[in-house]
Image 1 (cartoon, rainbow, N blue to C red):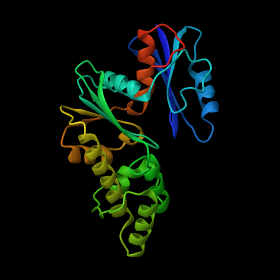
Image 2 (cartoon, rainbow, N blue to C red; image 1 turned 135 degrees about the vertical axis):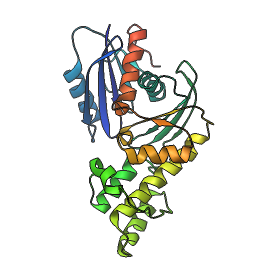
Image 3 (cartoon, rainbow, N blue to C red; image 1 turned 60 degrees about the vertical axis):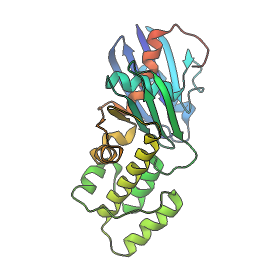
Length: 255
């Protein structure tokens, strides 16, 4: 059974074309200010006539008329993470504008969750701000902070942290030291957030920042549990949506 899952987030839109348990193709596009257009573009890129069910999730899940189902990102991230890393007990997702912690049972289903969607602190937007001020590419963060000594960042408010970073630069602190301080501040805050659910066992780290070892290792240190990632971590939501499509016939209801 061929199914298509699309996860439209605030920063990127991801898609996974699934055949049973096998991923046929993936695609990712920047969402920018045009989520409807990005959804349509990604759908056109991945859709095949044999697709029996298209499931959408994320902020823009209601923007694709061709979708058979719309499912919340909590459910989809949990299902996708459990498929990528069987046996996990918790999912931590750092998105562009929110941070989610999801507690799973042994079957990979949601038991409880917590979400921070009121402030950009500790999200992808926060990292984008840091990279802009420190003149470093996000894709090069691991190398940028390697063997550096972190400078403590006291503010997690995006506006105040920007002023703090500028002040630290004016005091002569190295850019890499400041960047590592920001990485660790984000991971410390995220770990405290996730620990409200009292996770046990292994944690799966999803979202765009899961690509970077600096974030994974710092999160593992602060949360005090093994943290796994996957080369497909960024596609966890879309994969979960596609897997849900495998289990259910097309329907217009939300999940």
